[in-house]
Image (cartoon, rainbow, N blue to C red; front, side, top):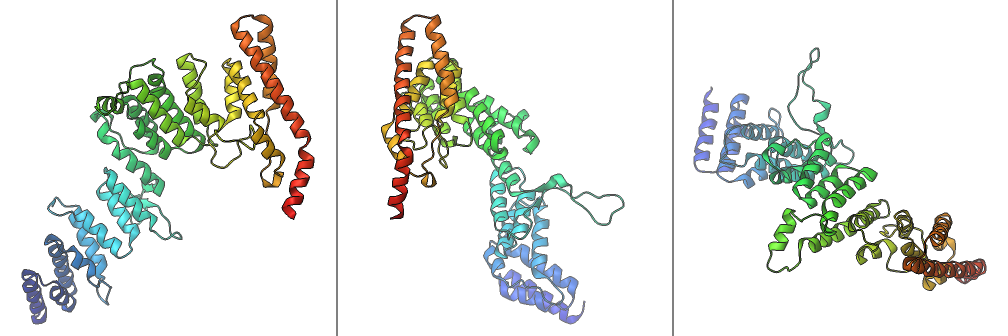
Length: 438
C-alpha cells in the first residue's frame, strides 16, 4: 500500500470515529487503490447504517465513476448483511429503502420477497415495489435459490420460482393467516395448495380469511364456486339453526357485552354482509346461498335482505333481464329456484310483482332500445310454472292449493296486463325517438 493510499485510509478511520460521513465518503472516492477503495466504502456503509444514519446514506451521490459503481457496492454490502446473523439492524428494510430511493423497484421487490419470505407485510411491500416497475418491463420476480444446470454456463432459475404480482398478493394473504392455523397445518401457499389452506381455514371457522384467500387465488366461475362453498358450508347451517355456532368470530361477538344476539342471528348478519359484498351479475353466489337457506331451514321463505337482493328493490326497466353493469339482482334465477324446489306460490308472486310493476312497464314503453329500453321475460319458464301449477291443482285439494290457485290467477292477470302494455310499445317508442331528436 503506497503512502497516498495509507493517508486516505487513515482519513477514513478518523472520519468514521467522528461520524463525519461526507468526509469519509470523500476519502473513499480519493482512494487510489480500487480494492482498498471498495473495502473502505463497505465499512462506511455498514457504519452509517449501524449508527442510525440511513438517511445520510440515501442522500449520498452514489453514481458510478470510472472505476467504481458505488450504488452496486452499497447494495452488495447490505445484501451480505441480510444473509448474516446480525439482528441488531433491520438490514432488509435498509436495503429496501436504498433501492426504493434510486427507483430500483425490481431489486427492492426481490429483496423483500427473498429475505422475508414467510411474512405477510414483506409480501405487501414487495407487491408495492412491483407495481412501480415500468409497465414496459417484465414484472416477474425471482424468489428462491439459483440452481446449476449441467452443460450450461452460469446459473438459471427454476420457472416455478418466478412470481407475478398476483402470486405475491396471494402469498401475502396466505401468510397473514398462518397464525390462525395449527403447527401441523402450516403449508407453503403456492397455487396447488391454496385450496387446502382455504378448507383448513373454513373448518377452523376463520370465514373472512378463507373468503379473502379464495377471492385472490381463483378467478371467474371457480372463485364464485369456492366462495359459495365457504358460505353455504359454514355460515348457512349456523344461521338456519341446524348446527351450533363454534366459529371464533361468532364466539367473540357473543362474548362482547355490547351485543345481545345469539350465534344464529350473528351468523345470518355475517352471511348478509359477505353475500351482499361479493355477489354480482356475473356469479351465482346469492342464488346458491338462497338455495342453501331454503334447503337447511325447511321454510318456504327466505330472509328479506336476500329476497330484496335477488329481486331488486328499485323498478327494473329490464324486467327479468340482468343486464345492468354491476347489478346484484337476478330475478330470473330466483324464479327458476322457486320452481325447482317446489315453492310455486312464491314463483307466481314473483312473476306478478315484476310484470305487474306499473313503473317498470311505463319506463320500458317510453324508452327506445338504443337508450336501454330492453326487457326480458322468460316465457318458457313461466309456461313451465303454469303447467306445474295446473297439475298440482288437479291432484291435490287443500289450503295450500287454494293459495296456489289465487297466486296463479294473480300471475295470469299480471301477464295479461303486461301483454296489453307491450302492444303500445312500438308507437310509444316512435314518439320517444321523435321527442329525443327534437
